[in-house]
Picture 1: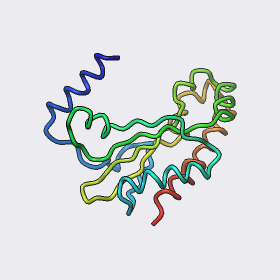
Picture 2: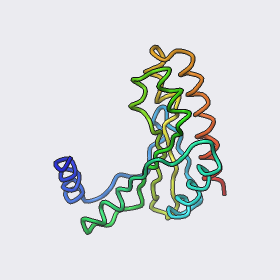
Picture 3: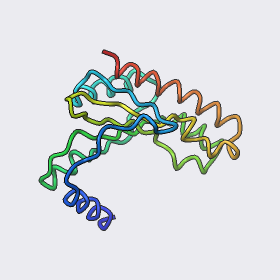
Picture 4: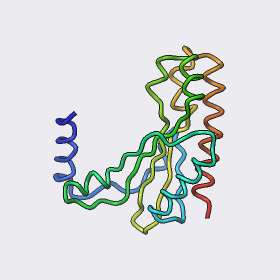
Length: 158
């Protein structure tokens, strides 16, 4: 684990600039540019998840990690979301699909000061396990598609 952190840290030092915004061509993703700044979007995502049937279970920020190295990079955070009831249903359908939980929301700061909210559609994430998990997993993925869409729409709304 320490080696991976050191490799990540070294890559931050070697690379002079970060890549641009998320490309629209990512299959299976939903990408929502928002009118909100990065910090505001974090709060709006927190509130949207709080109002949903799932919970925030993880939070990781490359921005905070870079700061620990004395570097400043644009806002970048991954928020993991899921819920115990969904986890039980997922695992009843497919143990292998468990590697995909929690689902992740990706918040990135744009050069113009706004922020983007993106995520992989649960139906895309769980598709490789549909043969194993059958209709139960497909129904769960569709339900989670709707939940993440509602969270994203609420958080991204003007």
